[in-house]
Image 1 (spheres, chains in turn purple, yellow):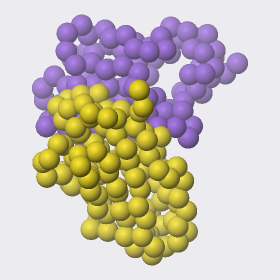
Image 2 (tube, chains in turn purple, blue; image 1 turned 90 degrees about the vertical axis):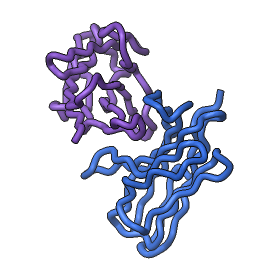
Image 3 (cartoon, chains in turn cyan, blue; image 1 turned 180 degrees about the vertical axis):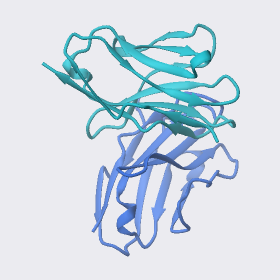
Length: 113
Length: 114
């Protein structure tokens, strides 16, 4: 069965520090991959997506992610974290039929002043 | 433009009662999805509608759960005889097509079953 794994449940970084959130997937073919962010009490907001082409994708709020087939990874990065980035981040991929999303367990990001 | 909207934002009900949750997708989006977010289970797919096709109900946890989509637009998720384990945030999403496509999420309905 296809799966998406986020190994880190919680991450704390200092404001201004760089950030990398890990995401691993297990899919046979080249997957479509998404990163969403959820602030407390809010729905999910799309940060970025990878469908094909350039393996480094840029998203909103200064985030980027790199698709690495050899490592089955799609890690999310930001060079300098802001306090407003504190939220929960979800990596996701659609099933083979391209319908429902399978989500990782999420990574909760805390930002220290 | 308007995003996905859901109502109510919060619902508190007593065990055994029925509840209805509503989702208004983005206008023109043919695909609509329901997910559930709970502490123990994370984000789980429930049901998927694509155009006039029969819905994919493979994620519904029991026959107490049902959903319909009227006129290819608004959707209602119904939970009958609610149980405490139904307490969760119910998220609706829509996408322009049913192919691998960006899903846009609503703010969710937080359901609490006492």
